[in-house]
Length: 365
Image (cartoon, rainbow, N blue to C red; front, top):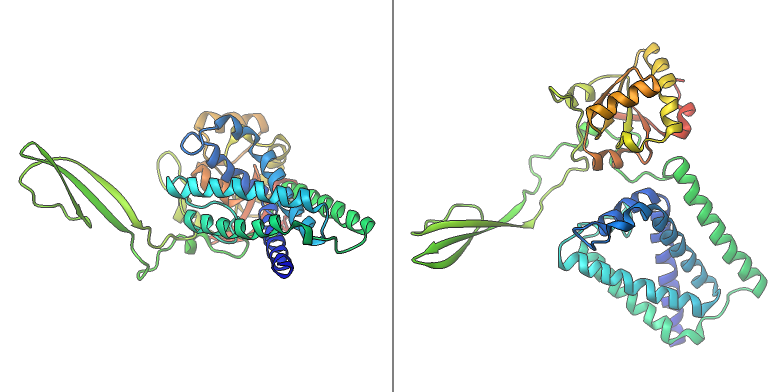
């Protein structure tokens, strides 16, 4: 039993630290995932959505800290009880998501590793089993170091986790796992290979035949039935290939300019998924940035999901001299974890990407 507890302690501790650190690297991204769970369509607790970022930071810091506590043997009873309650909650959450097909990706490992809802649930069940071993073998969990050193390491783990969360929020994730990272080409990321797996759909056709309801299932073709058509339900059996970049666009009111700008050299893209929520400190830096970039031969554009009235208001308020184009809000949140954030593109390839706090670090300034 003692050996099994030691093995479980190592496995659970390391996994919690890895999972927590990946989310701690991008707490803003995890907060977007929490907002999905809080929405009316999933848990129906929309009043929690404004607090998603705070909850995100608490959860990921706590996750890393619990992993550290477990490995060094700090306050074993508190640690194991906390692990048990946390895994029970997340097991319920992933089961609910999987069974009702509400959230396609749980966000357990951020953008580093995508898991389907059922894969996430299975992972949580395995973790639950290991944590139960720790729960029933609590007496075998002893501190690795002396009392003072154990306390120092525990405090250090908490402080470093909190500092790292603050650091990436004020700048950008230290490791970028997304399709828009520096060096990636956005146009290539939107391409679907010719031999890519196609979506597999199942169609349930409902007919009224002589006063009785009849359902015929096909792979898409319209069935030949002597009756009145009532309705059809579509079920996705296999989503097929999904390109890394989806829903990215650069659109004006009149035309789609995505291809044009992704083929241009020296383009500065200022991203604000919501101009209503744009950080004032960042907005105040955009005028100077645009003026310098234009003088140095760059094209400067803005991307937002906000409407024309808000675009005009922002430009007037901050004296901005570039045009804002339309793009999907969720896509823009994925492009850069900053509002506003700045990208330099060269024929669709991301050359530089910075948080508004780091505008002065752009190499052409």
